[in-house]
Length: 140
Figure 1 (cartoon, rainbow, N blue to C red):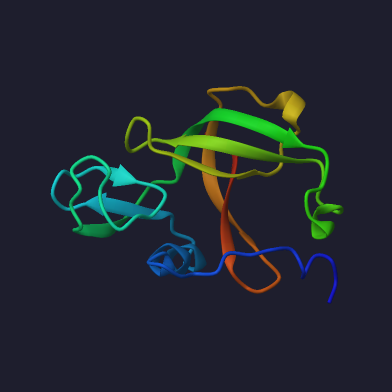
Figure 2 (cartoon, rainbow, N blue to C red):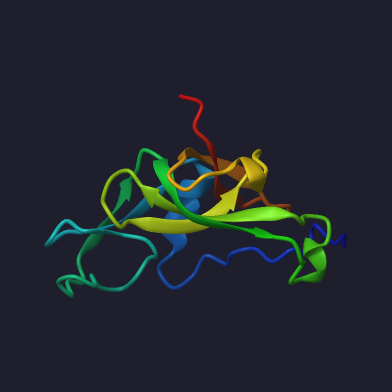
């Protein structure tokens, strides 16, 4: 097994299966509370605003802005040696204020990245076949 193949990957479990299934269809989906309408990432069994257990998986546009980011320069896993440096980005998604998710930003060096930059979701394959949501600077 190569170092790239050994890189950790998500295991769809504990109610996250619809998120990962959607990613494999190149869709970004999050939970939406059926009582108060609040969107949430990361998946949870109940709404943090109204404590409802009722939700559905809602498709998002995939547009957002960079809220925060960091450049990883030291590998934290043996399989990451070939990946450094890479950027971890916190993206505020367009559909709701404070709806944020963490991912990687591809295709842009940290020196060219700014807080507030427009980004769009993309999907990058893991060697195990799972597509992972990542972001790229918006071309529009």
